[in-house]
Length: 100
Image 1 (tube, rainbow, N blue to C red):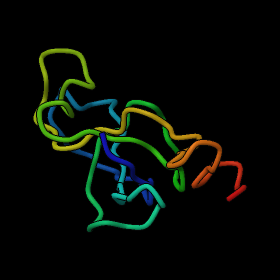
Image 2: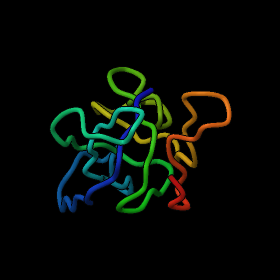
Image 3: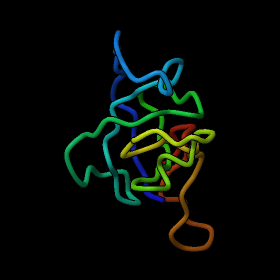
């Protein structure tokens, strides 16, 4: 799993049947300090994350497994919302409430 931030949504009027009803988002990969680590990517979102939310996501085969079989061809899936990251005991790197 990797950290990321939702920076946008994708509207697709035509897609494979298996992805109908599945939300698509633009995801910015992040390191543990919420700094961007690469270019934005398209991902499916199975947790209803909002723009600006910090999330964890998976890629490759695991991305497709976020949906029920038969698994569609997807490269990335948002699979959780991040509330807090701790790198050292008792010292939060960030919390979604805004307290840094």
